[in-house]
Image: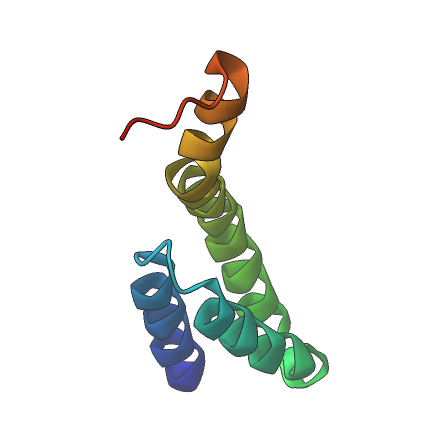
Length: 80
């Protein structure tokens, strides 16, 4: 259980940087591989965490790609 808490803290730390999603994805893959070995309580804790993480990932998407959407909505104008 303690190991899971450490992994979740690492996931939370990685999720704070919207410009490095690859590190977050790799850590998530490692955790997903260990799900069959987890207890029911650990799986429930992981589920609660992932629900919170989903919101953060959506926010990261808006941060990273929101400006691209704005460019396409308003038209791209190069200023020299």
